[in-house]
Image 1 (cartoon, rainbow, N blue to C red):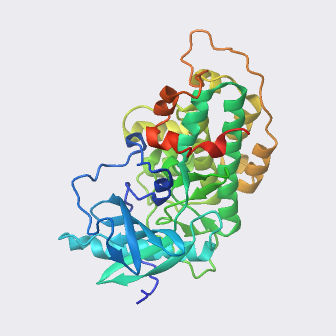
Image 2 (image 1 turned 60 degrees about the vertical axis):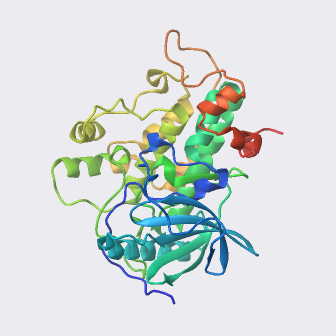
Image 3 (image 1 turned 90 degrees about the vertical axis):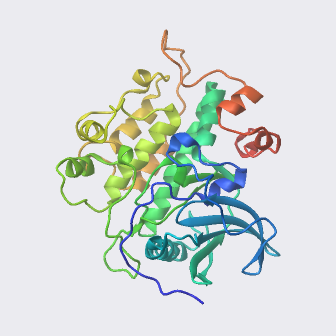
Length: 372
């Protein structure tokens, strides 16, 4: 029985689910901000039958939503379903969030996001079922190539950056703003393309649309654009996500993935960080402890401009700029600096540093990034 789509208020869940990460058998790294849910039991165990499919495994359970990998004759899928817990005050929020996400997945039809396969209710519990995406999260992919270092590591980081920005450009071209740019919401397929997840805070880029609009602005403050940081500091009502604001967030994400650090050494504390987002300019790669890359730094720097009008006119233009970035010469120009890009070989040790389990390494989940 299919639920009616609702444009109701959303409460941002900072530990939103990333079903795409299951493709590599990985959990979200703790440093990305996900809270542990080990103490919360799901309602289904492997082998259970649900919606005509067999549960392969539980991928994530929290106080609001359970996520499972399912197996059907047609292949694998991912199920998000309301967590049936005593705390039923979450029910309206979960229904709203799942319906909101389903509306955007249906609109995208698999373009730069998982395909929506089904939505409805099961014994009074809202659910949506989506395509299973096989790949690794962006943090793991980037860490692998930072550890590899050298010309190959840089080249693959460039490809990774281009793929991710291209995904957001495609999203914007479909008239959608993601609304929650952060590393854990991006997965890299085996062919190197990027897939975006968690559309619970997405909003249409135009007003004339049937797509729902969230009343609240969410997202991680470290990826706020300067104009949003100033609004938050002034304790004014949150401004809605914008295309130019999201461009800033995507550039901040790429900077983080390439260097392993944020674009500034932000102080501890929300207000201190917001002040620095509003006023400070990005550190150069050299200042961050990474070999300089002038063309990449210039492109990221423009997208990270304090003034929206100084950024690229669109994320598509940003994507085109990244497509023209060339490889720098490797100069070893960092005497005494802590090197983020190392000369590590592809050993088991470097795999562990990249956050991979031994099983993931043995099964070749990152083989899509290896040169032939």
